[in-house]
Image (cartoon, rainbow, N blue to C red; front, side, top):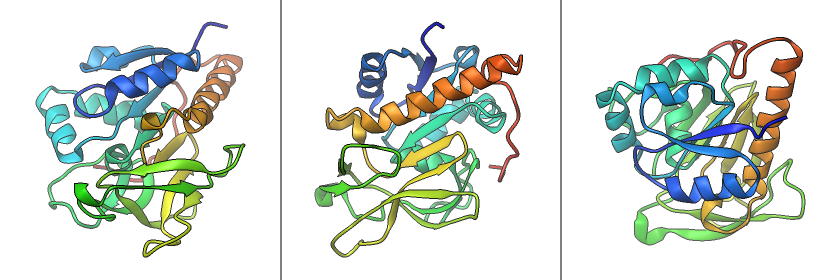
Length: 222
């Protein structure tokens, strides 16, 4: 079987870093800037960066609607930091007109850990990631304030004022983290996503569906 083709939303943020990690893990990694570049993808990464800027650029370039259709139709997706914000169904501290992709049944508080100067690293144990806690890099990071019944919390902050806050979640083929594993040299969280993409791809091929096919019920609309 050929390498899974995984796109990285390339409007703003840590695009190069994600492409490098995915390439190391054997994926055919490609930047996505236009709607046509969503065709044929087996998975998609929404990088960290600035969620408001990403959303505005996606709307301006005509990418937002096709992107929402793709992930709403079941394309596996992994969002880091700002990517988590884009995936969330509800935002607690955003302008009322800021759209999201609405495929992850969570309420997210943006910049919950503070400003850029308050960025930090902390160990986080992530369910499904073997080998002990990952070193999580938090940069103006969000956290998950609440999650619906179909959402599995994979990791929480262990110490400090934010102890117990959810920072890694999964709902079906949607994975999201508050932190930036692409910045640490530790590929384990990305490997979890690549394995998810491979499993989904193998399943759809067995069922005779095209890659990226199969509808997952949507949990919300932007």
